[in-house]
Length: 114
Length: 113
Image (cartoon, rainbow over all chains, first blue to last red):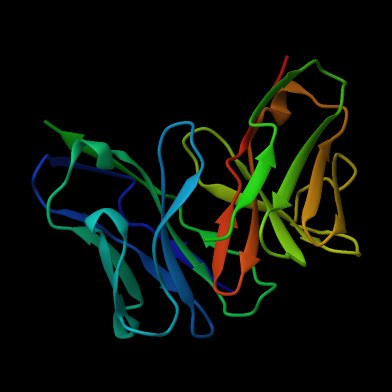
């Protein structure tokens, strides 16, 4: 079984300051991990993914995440927040098999203050 | 990247009527598609896994007779909400897996009045 924990339901940062969104996962086998962003009343957009290659993954819009197996973590970071980053962020875990679904974390709402 | 198209993006229907939501993989074949439901300010919860040419697999607590899923081709899965009631109002999202990545439809906001 797989599960995802996002430790913060809401994170608030000032524009121009760093962003850290935390994610821990549980998986009985080597996982694939993803971060998706959802703006209000919109669908999901993939930010980045880890699929057993490099542990430091760079995504779109300046986001990156590091897979740490020993800590079962996949935290999302960005050096400098922008107002347009305000949204809901979901950490997602899946297996490598084609028929496996994607298990979503509860989400973290990011607010960016001017 | 691959594209999943979901239609309609929003729908309002009367209680007791049925609503069909379509999910299409536009440039790849998807033997498996997934249907999720999202309540306001909550995460996505898997409702069912749709398999081409066979019966869907429903998650515990999801009524298969209320949420009918058909996956008749490698590029199309449909979710029909039968005899809809206001408590069925929600955001429904489909996804299809292409190798190591899931591609999501834009979602359907269903409002039952």
